Amino acid sequence: MSFEPKIVGFLCNWCSYTGADLAGTSRIPYPANVRIIRVMCSARIDPTFVVQALAQGADAVLICGCHPGDCHYSEGNYKAMRRFPLLKQLLKAYGVEDDRVRQTWVSASEGQRFAEIVTDLTERVRALGPSRIHPELLNDQRER
Amino acid sequence: MTEKKKLQIALYWGAACGGCDVAVLDTNEFILDVAAAADIRFWPIAVDGKYADVEALADGELDLAIFNGAVRNSENQQVAELLRRKSKILVAFGSCAHLGGIPGLANLVKREEILTTAYLANASIQSGNRTIPCPETNCDGKKLEIPVLYKRVYRLADIVDVDYFVPGCPPAPEQVKNVLLAVVQGELPPRKSVIGASDRTVCDDCKRSKEEKKIQRFFRPFEIIQNPDRCLLEQGLLCMGSATRSGCGVRCPNSNQGCRGCYGPPPGVRDQGTKFLSALASIIDSKDPAEIEEILSHLPDFTAYAYRFGLPASILQRSHRS
Image (cartoon, rainbow over all chains, first blue to last red):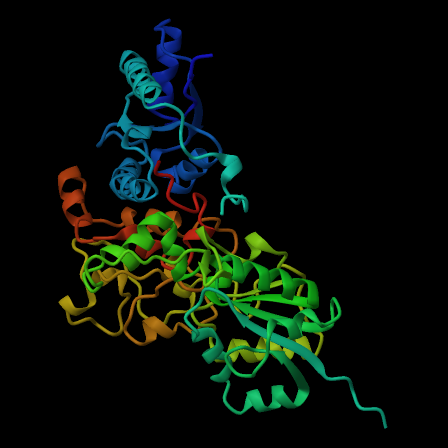
């Protein structure tokens, strides 16, 4: 059986989730590999959620919020923007490949863009192969 | 008159620096009261004793075993399992036993890389040296064994069932006293609790003034003259007080040093490093991706900073490089 990446997508309620919804209502096809979790704002996406998703078997994590300047809460997406480079640095130290985590901005009118992002990410992660983080190996004493 | 039965205790160090044992001795005269109230059955740093002496004890004969240090090799594990069997109460004492501690940072590299650096490739090693520790060696027809260095570092609780956790690198002497007194008086909280610490964060207990936090540049401590009354983070100096359990007495910020996070995450926080990342990055004073990158470039090794005392306790636990 061929490898199908499992991607967890955290989408903000106001722009990106609506954008993904538009992709659906506009019948724009995109891979079914992404599992979407709606949050109120991209600032709500604690970096802990991202590592937790990877630890529980996600092959990649997608974070989407409103474009800079368009945040429903004025500045929430800037907080997300500031965290991301540091999160990438942290994941690199853990040996997680760069392509497994992506943050990008999707507005409510960008259904097409959302579909393209998911398609591109899915193909990249498919090429990368399954995540090396094996949930069953975390805390495993046999790994001596 | 019947004499009250003395408390039977043991102390042991796994992968540790010895500072936790010193912290116990730092209770000064109090340690003499402990010696009067208790029989110290095993304590490698202070009293003579062999593993065989511990093996000879009946299961559960010890009232209290205090284990400091992480589990790094097969010897650490064997003694951890032995003390677990022989003790009614097993305490993970100090950051290494509690969260993996500084030895836990080794989880970011592979065992082979550590051995290569330490024994083969280091600049101070005689060139051509090929000697590297092997778990088994044959010498004059006899098999010699040394403990096996594990692939990664474990917390004590990853290996055996732990009753209580005492955080700190090292735990504050006052907390050491409180723990010993709690055992003597039988006033222990529910099993699995963190004892000798509070439920607040270091920030909650810090006396420095706190205003709006905005960071335009990070500084190393030697790069600026700090204001001793103002929050260190607001001055661009790294401080983990916001993501660290209190109970230490705010020792580091009171000494003009940023909190290093040794008491581990506060209650309810699963991963200290990512929580600190979230708090720290959010207060960077920029909305421009390139400028944000520039400001972050002044943090040369954020991961090791954020997990200085608890990498094995983090969600991802270790490097997942192939």
